[in-house]
Length: 253
View (spheres, rainbow, N blue to C red):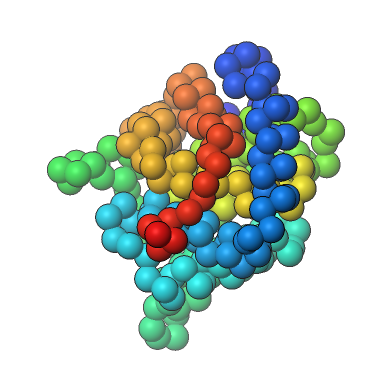
């Protein structure tokens, strides 16, 4: 399935899309009138939740939070392109020592990866390394196509969630695929609906609902047998993040 496909849109619109107009209006109002927080404050909180979602149990370090803030600033200031996406991913990645650190942290993976459950059993195998670059190139070609199209509010959220799901299933990096997929999803929203959507607290929602996220993203055991007929529960998650009214972290207490 391609991210441009509208096969599931009518079901999605019936399930979640019809409430979006009021929910997004409420979000934009909250994001625009909260004068107590600068963009930097918001990016710090979002970066914290992004790290929490990816790491599960380890609190993000100050260095990780600061580099996450740089990723958000990249998305906030620059247009969504594959090159700019790689710049943001570099900030999200671990800083590795040695001459190959950029290859290891930013380039698409050159080694096999898999997703395992808590007992060490493999539950999902992404595509082989030789297909990753072509799949990501195709993904960004489709993103460019979507960016040029006129869309309803519901269609924007539908395609944003498909972008997130598709990138996560490709798993193009050795690490930080969830981080990158969340940021890419929001970046698309910001391009279509306005930069304020970079501030959408989807990170917190996904983090607080990580078990559901895991269930909803793993809709097949290998990339080639993914069953997109099961994608609707995941697509419905992003609109739920519009309901979060406080993006504060434990650090704010």
